Image (cartoon, rainbow, N blue to C red; front, side):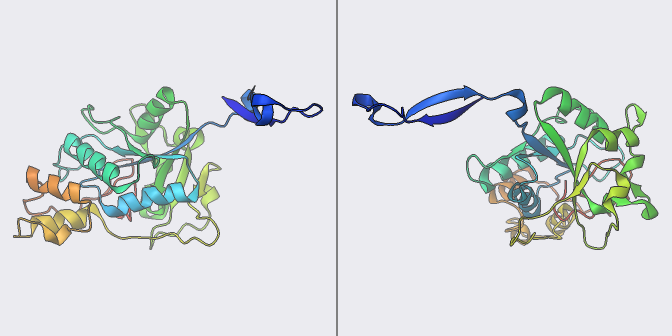
Length: 273
């Protein structure tokens, strides 16, 4: 990496092509280089909604991360209601991101779990990404995952290595989005690597309670093949994909209790993972 320095050639008359500033390149030292910070925003995305996209955009607006990586989870044996294939969910995420944002806007979709037999536990996913990326990672969660009194505590999450909740909060950073009805009095209780999503001065965070569960319920109980009942709640390309693939036609299943140790969009996901 280099930094450009303007040099005017002081002390002598400039002639010919020297009449414009000369551009010198000075190598940056290791300490001067800043690693990219990537917000890992995972979930079922069944389907991805405009609220998910809104949340991803606001993470960038907040400057909490340089880039957002949307990670649709692999198959969930603990969630029989998740019947949409990971490939379909991945494709919908790609359609949504590539049609919602301007070219170059730093939101992308990861295929990290597309070929997995089952969804990766959060510690496994972040460890895999850490080993394969030259970036600092921050995992996006909602305050609903920080409710020990309600049986939802990130520090108890497990992985393929067993009880790795303590290692998870010790080794990775977490960006916490406030969820209505899920207050956290002291974030530091969970560890020093937790931070609230905060918008710059004069900018308000735009919240939404739109969930994928609501989209599926509307689509399943709607007799209009045009699915106008979800138009405007998902990207037009996602709507077209749902219609073409015939997704969500069967009666929506009741919401399952959260049992798996990673954020998802089945319950309280005001545009989470």
